[in-house]
Image 1 (tube, rainbow, N blue to C red):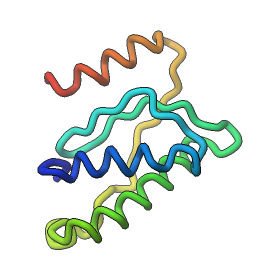
Image 2: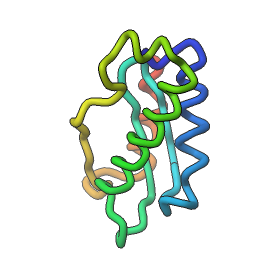
Image 3: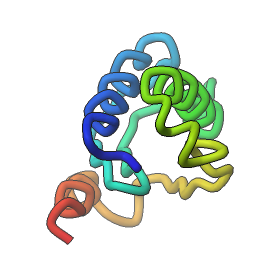
Image 4: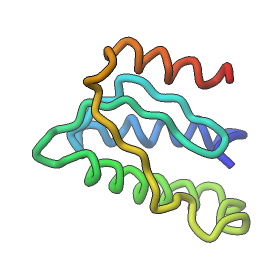
Length: 104
């Protein structure tokens, strides 16, 4: 679903909300059916808050700009998400993992 221009627009939407939702994208890979993000998030807002805002905003805009999404899916995003802090591995290892996802 996240291809044919939808992926490019999603990238723009995620990046444009950084100041408003107080996060920085350090690495991003958009796969056909999910997104990998390495982010620095304001701890006062929290990761769950930021991810939910990104999902809500991007779903609204993408479904408006790409009406075919409304026909294909009842919702763009599921309620699930995997969130982990970087600590057990280096920041560079996480960056490399995300970058390498396009090659899998």
